[in-house]
Image 1 (tube, rainbow, N blue to C red):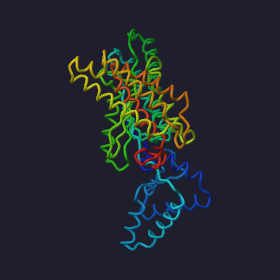
Image 2 (image 1 turned 180 degrees about the vertical axis):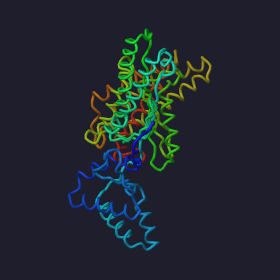
Image 3 (image 1 turned 60 degrees about the horizontal axis):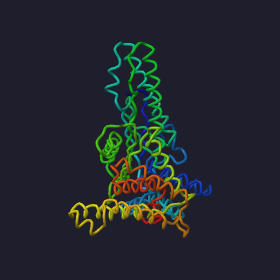
Image 4 (image 1 turned 135 degrees about the vertical axis):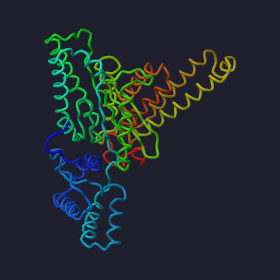
Length: 419
């Protein structure tokens, strides 16, 4: 499972800060950029920071853990050195404080952990009846495993473990979805090639569906214990394995956001290229683009407005279920279920119509409004035509997209960003 010299594990703080650091370093003049790196190098030598020089120097632009950039970490470190009267550390931390004073933002303190596993591998292994066929399967799985570190690095992420089809990767948040899709495609391509090779050596593969990859990505605060983050990633992978009705499907990405002092937000995106799955990633890409720094076409509050409509609609549905038919007709007229759905649809359209581009008074663009309406229509059949549930799932997608685009903590909805 491992051989040679293993690489240093990259600190989660460095992965969480990656996008923010790239932006900050690009905006700094050369003297300040040099001073920042030299100061952090001094802090490493003094034991107040650590180097991140593994993963084939993927983080060479700033090869340090970046932990002192988060929250009150710098203030806490300064207080500790003053109590101990450690002059070199006091001076280095004071210089870092001076440099940080010129930077108005701080990195998003959330990081992504990816866990992936193969779908249908047990059944597929039963295809092999000879030593040669077993060898082909083992070779294909090993080939995929060998690709994992490079595929992770292509998304600025770091592979922690890759034992066959069992994979764990610490991800940079904005590229976590790309990493998931790259891994799933590489696995699917290798398995499809394997099926053709097995057929050539006499294996009975008629009607056999090649294995696919299910991937879970958990978005958690960097201060959460690693065991908690890993458990959250396993929960996200379980979401990818089956839909809300418990049917095992796999071949999907499960996204799970564990907000500190907040709700768990989940979404499931299918890797399929036809049918409803084909729309999943296209829609998520639309939401991510709409929230990006360059566009700012969608305010964070839109998702919460959709949740409010969903809650009101659920309340009407519960009230209808509690009333007898005569009372329901008095409240909602003939065919109360239909009228409640019409109320929900009208309220949803009203929320979308009144949404304004972030930081302005202009209504969101027609194409974005149409994409929101279309996505709701796609989600309804998946949830038994439960309009309230479909709205909640759409709201979840929007919140996840917002987190995935937030390089700095000021952009997070929980901090009031772009409300």
